[in-house]
Length: 121
Image 1: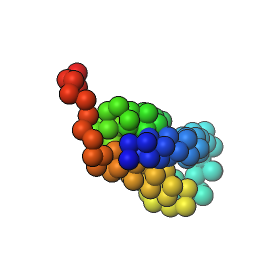
Image 2 (image 1 turned 180 degrees about the vertical axis):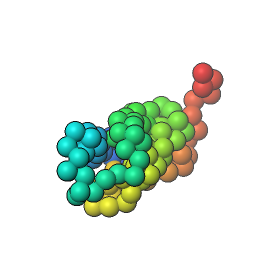
Image 3 (image 1 turned 90 degrees about the vertical axis):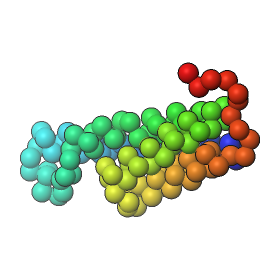
């Protein structure tokens, strides 16, 4: 389950990079060219730009951590999925990053083998 969680987190992050690039770029375009905003504006452009960067990062980092630190990796992937959802909503562009990161996060948290007995810090 940890390997599946890792792969799902990495795929979600890589797909999410494209979603994030579009979201960040759209906010910048509507700032520079206000006429472009007639096609649609984000309600909270600052959060969209923040989530455009942090959500793919959380998904990739969570996927990378899933094998050795499943709990932390799962939480990171679930936070990445939540950031995608709250920034962009659930639509055709975000369904795979949200679905893959959410499922990967659940698989990582539900992994049967407990983490190593070392301290987390």
